[in-house]
Image 1 (cartoon, rainbow, N blue to C red):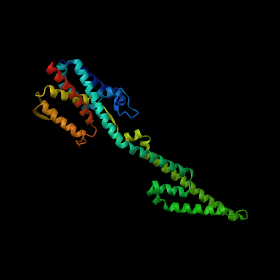
Image 2: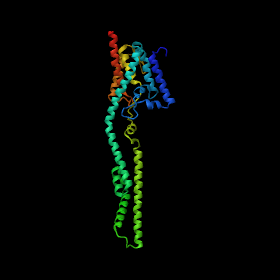
Image 3: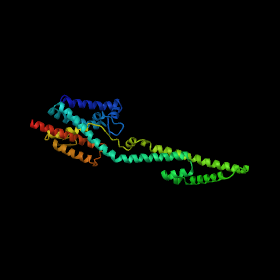
Image 4: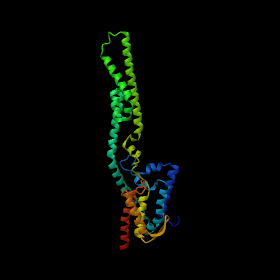
Length: 322
């Protein structure tokens, strides 16, 4: 690492150290607390605006970013000086985070009303189950099944018919004067009451089973944030990609005709053409194009590139006229 400039060397060491410390020592504890979450989430902490730039999802994520820093960073640091390069690197990283937050906000705004509607429906559903448990009548159970479990409602038709019959017979008998009944008739009434209690027990058991099914089905929707995570909407980001894309843009502006040789495309290509192609790809992906990279924060790349372009153009103009 003797040919590396001081800031680039320091950034490489910190990024590599943090990755291996997180993977093998802290068991992802650094990622849990250092990943940048969307501001509406309870996990969000202000320091994550900085710490997310030193965390990476896997080895290849780290490798890709560090290769960009290793090959292009020293050119810029030698040209601008350590202080300016340091400012540039973190400005691009913050720019990438800001753009990605805009994307998160759009996603959150689009889907959040649906989540709140689902939460209300879930609460209403649970209240209906609790009502049946407190009022275990055939009517209450049938109405619940018909609305929330139509398939079980169809299967339970014979049970419900028997329950309604027993319930109605019991109600009719309870209205009659039993003071003059003989012992045999009283035994019939007791048997009928026992029959009714049997159905009450069965309805309570059925309601308890429905509640267990309900809790299993909606256990991941106990609150709106849990729902987001269960649906894959983590709304979080990590990585130095915003800063690296800023470096790529600046390199193309300051050294446009330097020829590059890529591993997967072993043909010399000028930096300005390579970066232009890469930016078109990023714009397409950030606009919603299907590039098979669903978990990549393309807007963070774009944000870092835009901030990098603005700063690099300013410094290019400054050096040109001073």
